[in-house]
Image (cartoon, rainbow, N blue to C red; front, top):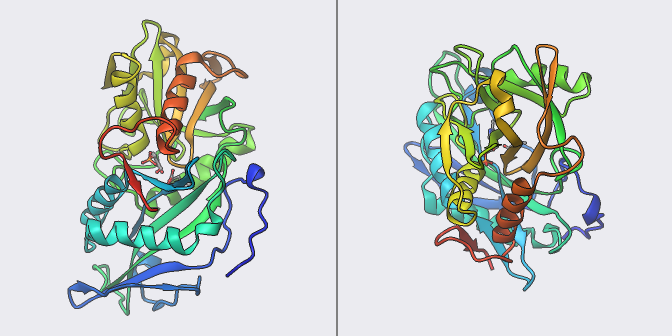
Length: 340
Ligand code: PLP
Ligand code: COI
Protein backbone atom coordinates (compact mmCIF):
# COMPACT_ATOMS: atom_id res chain seq x y z
CA UNK A 1 0.00 0.00 0.00
CA UNK A 2 1.28 3.46 -0.95
CA UNK A 3 2.07 5.81 1.89
CA UNK A 4 0.04 8.83 0.95
CA UNK A 5 1.57 12.26 1.37
CA UNK A 6 -0.83 14.60 -0.30
CA UNK A 7 -1.48 18.27 0.28
CA UNK A 8 -5.24 17.75 0.48
CA UNK A 9 -6.13 21.44 0.49
CA UNK A 10 -4.21 22.20 -2.70
CA UNK A 11 -5.26 19.38 -4.97
CA UNK A 12 -5.93 20.31 -8.57
CA UNK A 13 -7.25 17.99 -11.25
CA UNK A 14 -4.23 15.89 -12.30
CA UNK A 15 -3.47 12.21 -12.68
CA UNK A 16 -2.11 10.45 -9.62
CA UNK A 17 -1.41 6.73 -9.71
CA UNK A 18 -3.51 5.21 -6.95
CA UNK A 19 -3.11 1.66 -5.67
CA UNK A 20 -5.73 -0.46 -7.40
CA UNK A 21 -8.05 -0.26 -10.38
CA UNK A 22 -10.82 -2.60 -11.53
CA UNK A 23 -10.64 -4.36 -14.91
CA UNK A 24 -13.17 -6.64 -16.60
CA UNK A 25 -13.16 -8.06 -20.14
CA UNK A 26 -16.04 -8.84 -22.48
CA UNK A 27 -15.58 -11.71 -24.89
CA UNK A 28 -17.97 -14.11 -26.66
CA UNK A 29 -21.01 -12.20 -25.46
CA UNK A 30 -20.29 -11.90 -21.73
CA UNK A 31 -18.35 -9.87 -19.17
CA UNK A 32 -15.96 -11.79 -16.92
CA UNK A 33 -16.08 -11.34 -13.14
CA UNK A 34 -13.50 -8.55 -13.12
CA UNK A 35 -10.58 -8.08 -10.80
CA UNK A 36 -8.52 -5.39 -9.04
CA UNK A 37 -5.00 -4.87 -10.32
CA UNK A 38 -1.97 -2.76 -9.41
CA UNK A 39 -1.06 -2.43 -13.10
CA UNK A 40 -2.03 1.03 -14.40
CA UNK A 41 -0.97 0.20 -17.98
CA UNK A 42 -3.53 -1.13 -20.47
CA UNK A 43 -2.20 -3.88 -22.76
CA UNK A 44 -4.33 -4.04 -25.91
CA UNK A 45 -4.03 -5.07 -29.57
CA UNK A 46 -2.63 -2.42 -31.91
CA UNK A 47 -5.75 -3.05 -34.00
CA UNK A 48 -8.13 -2.03 -31.20
CA UNK A 49 -11.11 0.02 -32.41
CA UNK A 50 -10.67 2.34 -29.41
CA UNK A 51 -7.33 3.48 -30.89
CA UNK A 52 -8.42 4.03 -34.49
CA UNK A 53 -12.14 4.58 -34.60
CA UNK A 54 -12.82 6.14 -31.21
CA UNK A 55 -14.94 3.22 -30.02
CA UNK A 56 -14.85 4.09 -26.35
CA UNK A 57 -16.82 5.93 -23.70
CA UNK A 58 -16.26 7.00 -20.12
CA UNK A 59 -17.91 8.38 -17.00
CA UNK A 60 -16.90 10.82 -14.29
CA UNK A 61 -18.14 10.56 -10.72
CA UNK A 62 -16.87 11.16 -7.20
CA UNK A 63 -16.69 9.56 -3.75
CA UNK A 64 -16.97 11.96 -0.79
CA UNK A 65 -15.75 11.58 2.78
CA UNK A 66 -18.46 12.59 5.26
CA UNK A 67 -18.10 14.16 8.72
CA UNK A 68 -18.89 10.82 10.41
CA UNK A 69 -16.15 9.04 8.42
CA UNK A 70 -18.55 7.26 6.06
CA UNK A 71 -18.15 7.45 2.26
CA UNK A 72 -20.82 8.70 -0.17
CA UNK A 73 -21.36 8.12 -3.86
CA UNK A 74 -23.65 10.63 -5.57
CA UNK A 75 -26.29 9.11 -7.88
CA UNK A 76 -24.06 6.33 -9.29
CA UNK A 77 -27.10 4.70 -10.91
CA UNK A 78 -27.33 7.78 -13.15
CA UNK A 79 -23.72 7.34 -14.30
CA UNK A 80 -24.40 3.67 -15.02
CA UNK A 81 -27.51 4.59 -17.01
CA UNK A 82 -25.66 7.27 -19.00
CA UNK A 83 -22.90 4.78 -19.78
CA UNK A 84 -25.60 2.43 -21.12
CA UNK A 85 -26.69 5.20 -23.49
CA UNK A 86 -23.08 5.88 -24.55
CA UNK A 87 -22.44 2.16 -25.15
CA UNK A 88 -25.66 1.84 -27.16
CA UNK A 89 -24.67 4.80 -29.35
CA UNK A 90 -21.23 3.32 -30.13
CA UNK A 91 -22.39 -0.28 -30.50
CA UNK A 92 -20.64 -1.52 -27.38
CA UNK A 93 -22.01 -3.97 -24.78
CA UNK A 94 -23.61 -2.38 -21.71
CA UNK A 95 -22.03 -2.83 -18.31
CA UNK A 96 -24.94 -3.91 -16.07
CA UNK A 97 -25.76 -1.30 -13.41
CA UNK A 98 -25.00 -3.68 -10.51
CA UNK A 99 -21.62 -4.59 -12.01
CA UNK A 100 -20.83 -0.89 -12.61
CA UNK A 101 -21.66 0.15 -9.03
CA UNK A 102 -19.92 -2.88 -7.55
CA UNK A 103 -16.73 -2.03 -9.51
CA UNK A 104 -16.87 1.57 -8.28
CA UNK A 105 -17.35 0.43 -4.67
CA UNK A 106 -14.41 -1.97 -4.93
CA UNK A 107 -12.14 0.75 -6.28
CA UNK A 108 -13.16 3.25 -3.59
CA UNK A 109 -12.62 0.76 -0.77
CA UNK A 110 -9.29 -0.46 -2.19
CA UNK A 111 -8.02 3.14 -2.36
CA UNK A 112 -9.76 4.50 0.71
CA UNK A 113 -6.64 6.24 2.01
CA UNK A 114 -6.67 8.40 -1.15
CA UNK A 115 -10.06 9.93 -0.32
CA UNK A 116 -9.47 13.56 0.68
CA UNK A 117 -10.58 14.27 4.25
CA UNK A 118 -13.96 15.78 5.06
CA UNK A 119 -13.72 19.57 4.95
CA UNK A 120 -10.66 19.68 2.67
CA UNK A 121 -12.78 20.52 -0.37
CA UNK A 122 -11.38 17.51 -2.23
CA UNK A 123 -12.96 14.24 -3.31
CA UNK A 124 -12.02 10.98 -4.98
CA UNK A 125 -12.70 11.25 -8.71
CA UNK A 126 -13.70 7.97 -10.35
CA UNK A 127 -13.18 7.31 -14.02
CA UNK A 128 -15.07 4.28 -15.38
CA UNK A 129 -14.52 3.56 -19.09
CA UNK A 130 -15.32 1.01 -21.78
CA UNK A 131 -13.03 0.55 -24.80
CA UNK A 132 -13.19 -1.63 -27.89
CA UNK A 133 -10.15 -3.94 -27.99
CA UNK A 134 -8.87 -7.01 -29.84
CA UNK A 135 -7.39 -7.61 -33.29
CA UNK A 136 -9.29 -5.70 -35.96
CA UNK A 137 -8.74 -3.57 -39.06
CA UNK A 138 -11.99 -2.57 -40.80
CA UNK A 139 -14.49 -0.05 -39.50
CA UNK A 140 -16.65 -2.34 -37.40
CA UNK A 141 -17.41 -2.96 -33.75
CA UNK A 142 -14.62 -4.60 -31.75
CA UNK A 143 -14.48 -8.34 -31.05
CA UNK A 144 -13.70 -7.70 -27.37
CA UNK A 145 -14.20 -4.92 -24.83
CA UNK A 146 -12.57 -3.78 -21.65
CA UNK A 147 -14.35 -2.09 -18.74
CA UNK A 148 -12.15 -0.43 -16.16
CA UNK A 149 -12.50 1.99 -13.24
CA UNK A 150 -9.64 3.96 -11.73
CA UNK A 151 -9.62 6.77 -9.18
CA UNK A 152 -7.66 9.94 -8.45
CA UNK A 153 -7.93 12.37 -5.52
CA UNK A 154 -8.94 15.78 -6.90
CA UNK A 155 -9.71 19.35 -5.91
CA UNK A 156 -11.07 22.14 -8.13
CA UNK A 157 -11.25 21.60 -11.91
CA UNK A 158 -11.42 25.28 -12.83
CA UNK A 159 -8.83 27.33 -10.97
CA UNK A 160 -10.30 29.02 -7.91
CA UNK A 161 -13.23 26.58 -7.45
CA UNK A 162 -16.14 28.73 -6.34
CA UNK A 163 -14.41 31.93 -7.56
CA UNK A 164 -15.95 33.17 -10.85
CA UNK A 165 -14.21 32.25 -14.12
CA UNK A 166 -14.51 33.91 -17.52
CA UNK A 167 -15.30 32.11 -20.76
CA UNK A 168 -15.35 32.90 -24.48
CA UNK A 169 -17.56 31.41 -27.18
CA UNK A 170 -15.96 29.22 -29.84
CA UNK A 171 -16.72 29.14 -33.54
CA UNK A 172 -15.94 25.39 -33.47
CA UNK A 173 -18.44 22.70 -32.46
CA UNK A 174 -17.77 19.80 -30.09
CA UNK A 175 -20.60 17.76 -31.59
CA UNK A 176 -22.91 17.64 -34.61
CA UNK A 177 -26.73 18.08 -34.57
CA UNK A 178 -27.41 14.33 -34.84
CA UNK A 179 -23.95 13.19 -33.77
CA UNK A 180 -22.59 11.96 -30.47
CA UNK A 181 -22.89 15.08 -28.30
CA UNK A 182 -25.29 13.40 -25.89
CA UNK A 183 -22.95 10.44 -25.38
CA UNK A 184 -19.88 10.67 -23.17
CA UNK A 185 -17.43 9.52 -25.83
CA UNK A 186 -13.80 10.49 -26.38
CA UNK A 187 -14.38 11.91 -29.87
CA UNK A 188 -16.33 14.85 -28.42
CA UNK A 189 -13.40 15.67 -26.17
CA UNK A 190 -10.83 15.29 -29.00
CA UNK A 191 -12.92 17.83 -30.92
CA UNK A 192 -12.82 20.16 -27.90
CA UNK A 193 -9.01 20.23 -27.48
CA UNK A 194 -8.22 22.92 -30.06
CA UNK A 195 -11.10 25.29 -29.13
CA UNK A 196 -10.31 24.82 -25.42
CA UNK A 197 -6.62 25.50 -26.08
CA UNK A 198 -7.41 28.65 -28.05
CA UNK A 199 -9.65 29.96 -25.26
CA UNK A 200 -7.03 29.27 -22.58
CA UNK A 201 -4.29 30.92 -24.68
CA UNK A 202 -6.43 34.06 -24.59
CA UNK A 203 -6.75 33.94 -20.80
CA UNK A 204 -10.19 32.33 -20.50
CA UNK A 205 -10.93 29.30 -18.31
CA UNK A 206 -12.40 27.43 -21.31
CA UNK A 207 -14.77 27.99 -24.21
CA UNK A 208 -18.52 27.97 -24.55
CA UNK A 209 -20.05 25.89 -27.34
CA UNK A 210 -23.06 27.23 -29.20
CA UNK A 211 -25.68 25.00 -30.82
CA UNK A 212 -24.06 23.39 -33.86
CA UNK A 213 -26.98 24.14 -36.20
CA UNK A 214 -27.48 27.90 -35.79
CA UNK A 215 -24.69 29.11 -33.46
CA UNK A 216 -27.17 31.36 -31.67
CA UNK A 217 -27.79 29.42 -28.41
CA UNK A 218 -25.51 28.37 -25.57
CA UNK A 219 -25.03 24.59 -25.29
CA UNK A 220 -22.10 23.69 -23.05
CA UNK A 221 -19.24 25.24 -21.09
CA UNK A 222 -16.11 23.21 -21.87
CA UNK A 223 -16.70 19.87 -20.11
CA UNK A 224 -19.67 21.13 -18.11
CA UNK A 225 -23.31 22.16 -18.58
CA UNK A 226 -24.59 25.74 -18.41
CA UNK A 227 -27.25 27.28 -16.19
CA UNK A 228 -28.37 30.86 -15.59
CA UNK A 229 -30.70 32.74 -13.29
CA UNK A 230 -33.11 35.21 -14.89
CA UNK A 231 -33.86 38.68 -13.53
CA UNK A 232 -37.17 37.34 -12.20
CA UNK A 233 -35.46 34.45 -10.40
CA UNK A 234 -36.00 31.49 -12.74
CA UNK A 235 -33.39 28.73 -13.13
CA UNK A 236 -32.81 28.20 -16.86
CA UNK A 237 -30.63 25.62 -18.58
CA UNK A 238 -30.33 24.71 -22.27
CA UNK A 239 -32.15 21.74 -23.75
CA UNK A 240 -30.58 20.20 -26.85
CA UNK A 241 -29.98 16.71 -28.28
CA UNK A 242 -26.27 17.49 -28.71
CA UNK A 243 -25.64 18.34 -25.02
CA UNK A 244 -24.24 15.78 -22.62
CA UNK A 245 -27.02 15.43 -20.06
CA UNK A 246 -25.31 16.44 -16.84
CA UNK A 247 -26.28 14.58 -13.69
CA UNK A 248 -25.19 17.62 -11.68
CA UNK A 249 -27.40 19.89 -13.81
CA UNK A 250 -30.52 17.76 -13.33
CA UNK A 251 -29.77 17.59 -9.60
CA UNK A 252 -29.50 21.40 -9.46
CA UNK A 253 -32.75 21.70 -11.35
CA UNK A 254 -34.47 19.61 -8.66
CA UNK A 255 -32.72 21.51 -5.86
CA UNK A 256 -33.71 24.90 -7.33
CA UNK A 257 -37.35 23.81 -7.66
CA UNK A 258 -37.81 21.74 -4.50
CA UNK A 259 -35.51 23.46 -2.02
CA UNK A 260 -35.15 27.03 -3.27
CA UNK A 261 -38.75 27.25 -4.48
CA UNK A 262 -37.67 28.54 -7.90
CA UNK A 263 -39.33 28.13 -11.25
CA UNK A 264 -37.11 25.99 -13.44
CA UNK A 265 -37.02 25.49 -17.18
CA UNK A 266 -34.98 23.77 -19.85
CA UNK A 267 -35.04 25.96 -22.93
CA UNK A 268 -33.11 28.21 -25.26
CA UNK A 269 -30.42 30.52 -23.91
CA UNK A 270 -29.67 32.94 -26.75
CA UNK A 271 -26.14 34.29 -26.82
CA UNK A 272 -27.41 37.76 -27.78
CA UNK A 273 -29.86 37.85 -24.82
CA UNK A 274 -27.43 37.54 -21.90
CA UNK A 275 -28.85 40.71 -20.33
CA UNK A 276 -31.84 38.58 -19.28
CA UNK A 277 -29.66 36.78 -16.70
CA UNK A 278 -28.25 38.01 -13.41
CA UNK A 279 -26.14 34.95 -12.59
CA UNK A 280 -24.67 32.09 -14.61
CA UNK A 281 -22.64 29.01 -13.90
CA UNK A 282 -20.95 25.90 -15.26
CA UNK A 283 -21.88 22.64 -13.55
CA UNK A 284 -20.60 19.09 -13.65
CA UNK A 285 -18.91 16.42 -11.59
CA UNK A 286 -15.44 17.91 -12.09
CA UNK A 287 -16.56 21.56 -12.25
CA UNK A 288 -19.08 21.15 -9.36
CA UNK A 289 -20.50 24.66 -9.73
CA UNK A 290 -18.14 27.19 -11.24
CA UNK A 291 -19.71 30.65 -11.31
CA UNK A 292 -19.36 32.37 -14.68
CA UNK A 293 -18.02 35.90 -14.21
CA UNK A 294 -18.40 36.94 -17.83
CA UNK A 295 -18.69 35.63 -21.39
CA UNK A 296 -16.90 37.08 -24.40
CA UNK A 297 -18.77 36.79 -27.68
CA UNK A 298 -17.87 38.46 -30.98
CA UNK A 299 -15.73 41.10 -29.33
CA UNK A 300 -18.21 42.02 -26.60
CA UNK A 301 -17.69 40.96 -22.97
CA UNK A 302 -20.82 40.44 -20.88
CA UNK A 303 -20.50 40.32 -17.09
CA UNK A 304 -23.25 38.58 -15.10
CA UNK A 305 -23.25 39.11 -11.32
CA UNK A 306 -19.57 39.98 -10.88
CA UNK A 307 -16.14 38.87 -12.08
CA UNK A 308 -14.98 38.36 -8.50
CA UNK A 309 -18.01 37.61 -6.28
CA UNK A 310 -20.28 34.56 -6.33
CA UNK A 311 -23.93 35.42 -6.89
CA UNK A 312 -26.35 34.69 -4.01
CA UNK A 313 -28.42 32.03 -5.79
CA UNK A 314 -25.35 30.29 -7.19
CA UNK A 315 -23.97 30.11 -3.66
CA UNK A 316 -27.17 28.65 -2.27
CA UNK A 317 -27.25 26.04 -5.04
CA UNK A 318 -23.61 25.19 -4.35
CA UNK A 319 -24.11 24.86 -0.59
CA UNK A 320 -27.14 22.63 -1.06
CA UNK A 321 -25.49 20.41 -3.69
CA UNK A 322 -22.19 19.96 -1.87
CA UNK A 323 -24.05 19.58 1.44
CA UNK A 324 -26.01 16.67 -0.02
CA UNK A 325 -22.91 15.09 -1.58
CA UNK A 326 -20.89 15.23 1.64
CA UNK A 327 -23.75 14.14 3.88
CA UNK A 328 -24.29 17.49 5.64
CA UNK A 329 -27.75 18.02 4.20
CA UNK A 330 -30.55 15.54 3.77
CA UNK A 331 -30.48 13.95 0.34
CA UNK A 332 -33.54 13.37 -1.83
CA UNK A 333 -34.47 9.67 -1.83
CA UNK A 334 -32.02 7.50 -3.74
CA UNK A 335 -29.37 10.16 -4.38
CA UNK A 336 -26.74 8.86 -1.96
CA UNK A 337 -25.22 5.38 -1.97
CA UNK A 338 -23.02 4.61 1.02
CA UNK A 339 -19.82 2.77 0.21
CA UNK A 340 -19.12 2.37 3.87
N1 PLP B 1 -20.89 18.23 -20.26
C1 PLP B 1 -19.74 17.63 -20.61
C2 PLP B 1 -19.27 17.76 -22.01
C3 PLP B 1 -19.03 16.88 -19.65
O1 PLP B 1 -17.88 16.29 -19.96
C4 PLP B 1 -19.53 16.79 -18.33
C5 PLP B 1 -18.84 15.98 -17.34
O2 PLP B 1 -19.21 14.88 -17.04
C6 PLP B 1 -20.73 17.43 -18.02
C7 PLP B 1 -21.37 18.15 -19.01
C8 PLP B 1 -21.30 17.35 -16.65
O3 PLP B 1 -21.95 16.14 -16.43
P1 PLP B 1 -22.07 15.54 -14.96
O4 PLP B 1 -22.76 16.56 -14.14
O5 PLP B 1 -22.90 14.33 -15.14
O6 PLP B 1 -20.71 15.27 -14.49
C1 COI C 1 -16.57 15.22 -15.40
O1 COI C 1 -17.06 16.22 -14.86
O2 COI C 1 -16.60 14.11 -14.87
C2 COI C 1 -15.96 15.29 -16.69
O3 COI C 1 -16.09 14.37 -17.44
C3 COI C 1 -15.14 16.41 -17.00
C4 COI C 1 -13.86 15.95 -17.54
C5 COI C 1 -13.82 15.44 -18.89
C6 COI C 1 -12.64 16.29 -16.88
